[in-house]
Image 1 (cartoon, rainbow, N blue to C red):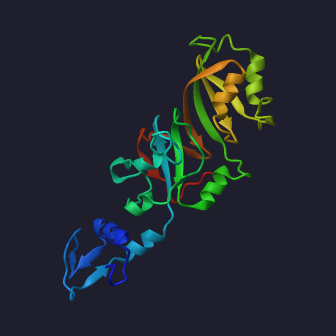
Image 2 (image 1 turned 90 degrees about the vertical axis):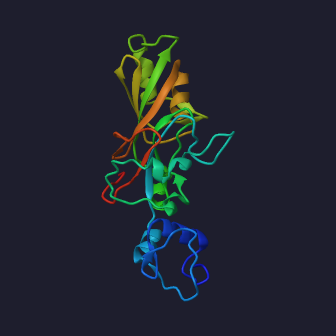
Image 3 (image 1 turned 90 degrees about the horizontal axis):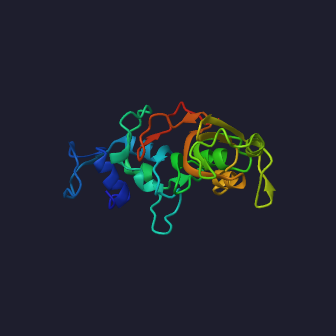
Length: 242
């Protein structure tokens, strides 16, 4: 296929694995040898699928970094493969290896945090979620301790909760207003419209709280839902973040 100019070697392998290539009318198999007179046909779906830019919704587990590998930790993108594609993905899209190439994280999620991470091949999605003008909300569930207490809600000062909502600075810059409220005795709900490095953990430190668990459950209109940890699904054609 490469010699005939039909595809690169990598593309040819992917198309054969996806069942998009026939040799003399029969499905091709990887490593198959063919003669110079063989009739090779490529399903038009191969090029149509190749041209699509996909956006992946991943439930990132603890222990993976959002972007490039660092300090011996793998990037979350290594989890985007056929074996971890959620069986209940509502999009109806079929995975092929090209969907795992060129994925960039649209926002960060710390190595010790879990939850919804967006990986995309589409620069428009990245700009919407992390561009300077982005107004898309991100929602987090944050488990905290206060001065060693595992159930801090009743003792945490109201004025400090008000500061979490608005009034704190990081690195000399005032933070945008947030929505922060208790949802049970040891868990806060944060809704932010910005994503500074380790922002929630640093905000909590400023008012004496220690974060012991952090999970992102929503980005804009898209909820984590029942997506299992370590698995992923496609952003469906009818879904939007804003």
